Each structure stands twice: as C-alpha cells, then as structure tokens.
Amino acid sequence: MPSSLSAVPDIDEQLAQTMLERLAVIEDRLRESVSTNDHLARWTARHLLDAGGKRVRPMLVLLAASLGDAQRDEVIDAAVLVELTHLASLYHDDVMDSASTRRGTRSAHAIWGNNVAILTGDFLFARASGLSSRLGTEAVQLHSLTFERLCLGQLHETVGPQDDEDPFEHYISVLSDKTASLLAMAGQLGALQAGAPEGSAEVMRRYGEKIGVAFQLADDVLDLESDPGTSGKTPGTDLREGVPTMPTLLVRRRAAAGERRAAAIVERLEGDLSNDAALEEVVAMLREDPALEETRALAQRTADEAIGVLSELPAGAVRDSLAGFARSLVQRSR
Image 1 (cartoon, one colour):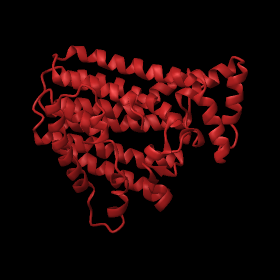
Image 2 (cartoon, helix red, strand yellow; image 1 turned 45 degrees about the vertical axis):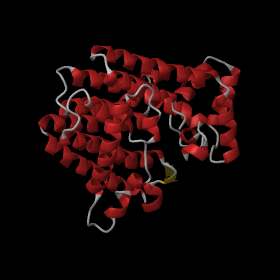
Image 3 (cartoon, helix red, strand yellow; image 1 turned 60 degrees about the horizontal axis):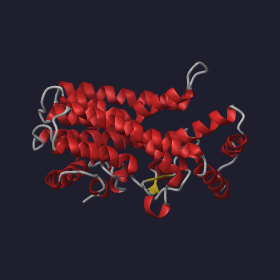
Image 4 (cartoon, helix red, strand yellow; image 1 turned 120 degrees about the vertical axis):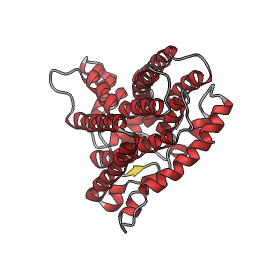
C-alpha cells in the first residue's frame, strides 16, 4: 500500500483495497499517457513520473468517485488528467524557483536546461488536455479554469503582493491557486465522472479548496522539519530559493513590529543562504520560533474546516475516509 494511503486514518478497509487496485491501473495509464516516439521527450516527459510521488490527487479523485460509481473508466481518465496537470506544473515551478532537485532527484531543468523543462511541461499539459476532451465539455471547462488558476498563482507569487495588499491574504490566495485549485478539481471531477448524487461535486470542490491550502501550509512546516534521509528534501529548501512561506511571513510581521529575535531571523533570511552552514543556522532558529507552531495550527484549523464541509455528505465509510484523508495531509512527516 502506498505510504500516503496507509497513513490515512479511518479509511475503510474495503475502500482502501479497491483504491489500491485502481491506483495500479492509474499508474499504468500515466505511463501510457506520457509515452511518445520522440527521441528526447520520451525521457524528459517521464523524468518526474519515474521519480515517484504520493499520488495525492488521484487518491482524491478515487475517494470522491466512491460517492457514485467509482468503477467507471472515466474515473481513471479523470485521475490521470489531474496528475498529468500536476506533473506538468512541477516542471514549470522548478524553473521559476530555480530548484535543483525534485522528489530526491535532479530537476529536469538542472539536467536539460530551462527551455527543455518548460516545453516538457507544455507537452504534458497538451496530453492532459487531450484526456479532458474525452471526458466532455464540462471536464474541458473545469480543466481550463484550473490551468488558468495555476498560471495566475505562479504569476502572483513571482510578482509578490502589491503595496496596498495584505501579504497574508496574498499568500493564501497564491496557495489557493497554485495548490488548492488542483485538489478542488480532483474532488469535483471525481464526483462528476462517477455520477455521484447532485450536489456532491460542489461539496467536493469546496472540500478540495480547503485541504489544498491546509496541505501547503503543512508543507511550509515540513520544509523546516523534514528529515533528508526519509524525505529526500534538504530542510530550508524554500528559504534558499527565496520562496515565501507562512512561517517567514509571520516572522517578518513581528520583525516589522520591532521584535529583536524576529529581526535577527529576518537578517539571516536576507543574507547569503547558498552556504549550508548559514542555511542550517536560520532553519534552527525558525524551528524554535513560535511561527512554526502557528503555521501548524493554521494548517490543522483549515483541515478541520474541510472536514466540516463533509457534513453535507451522507454519513458512512466514504465520508469518514475523506475526513481521514484531510487529517493525513496535515499530519504527515514527509
């Protein structure tokens, strides 16, 4: 069982077994979807797929589909569509963030250069678009809207908040577009393609929006607490790459109010973090700062709000499993 599925509390055993079988089919379909006779793209397009991943989004598609007929082949296509879109966005994100690694391996742009990485992401978006057309007009519209939000989220993160914009509201809006939009699409599309009862898809959309934000806030904590031996990620990667996170925003707010300890952290954040010792020092300071627990608590509250949305669904194994899924996203250790 994938670690991300086995870690879901309260998941129904029979549902989990069915999902495992369907996830194996999804994995095969993913590989078919990126296959090509092009001599270069055949390697670049499968680079991140071969690196693995938690398959969080396909799992949500399957959970949402369990509100209807999860055995429909369209559900598999929906799961592959969502994961292909996610993979495509990672190629672009790594270029934008100048990330040298992804999923414990060298990022595509570090191997083949920025142009190849960007065009590979475009190639995967094209393959995802082809899948959406097979699912019908509603899926095409939903996919195009999600693609638009992904672009706007990256744009707003790159430009940063405007002078009259609250940095915290700006940050949450970026998380909503860059991360939550895909989880919202996963939940909504899974319910739609499974023919779930009327209203279920909208509930799953709102649930996905909430858990997407919670998931990324939890990732902000993991960026500081991660164990390289198990996660494949060096603690403080986001700090080194200059990517804003909720803990650093909280620290900067206290520094602006005159708090000396926070100001000392900000001074180090704005220094040269290419040196491992300097990065380790600022990570250690942030691990001891209240901002880390504040972020963890915010992630948990947001997950609890997502679970609250589920009260609109019928009680039973699927609703309990969705609640457990939300908890697992904020309680994970890698």
